[in-house]
Length: 202
Image (cartoon, rainbow, N blue to C red; front, side, top):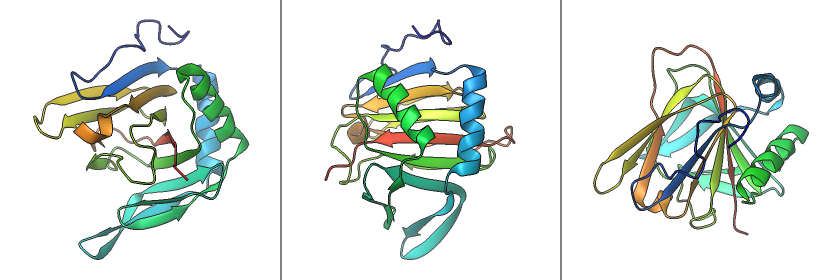
């Protein structure tokens, strides 16, 4: 158990079958989480995300950024991004979650949600650029938000709330069998930053 989420069992699998999701709770003190949250808001090169849906370009309110140890290209929603070099703070956070999980990561996709009005629709991270069945480490900062999973065949759902400074890890065949989303909500007015550490296959 870590210091900040003593009641949370990080070995618990939140999915009933066909995948593995572990929630570690808060890895950082409130002070340290606040430091990283402020730094990420101010120093990351945020851009509005773009998607091509049915041939039409959509610009999202949500902002994104893509960083890595090489200028990796990552394609999703029919658009391609080239990774920026790691910042000092992203390297520190990568080291933190690699130590905690025993996994390794070479890139990070960041999302900035300005309020609860902004969310993410059902999807799975199954792009061919990513290591198949590789772990994705998701660090959350700012507003607490509900996060949901839905099985692709049975439609069974699993939901949990991601705390400020917390880590969620998806691995194994999770992306093959489950969708996930960040539901929008009118109840939250504060921003949230989410870092998803990934492994790009060269």
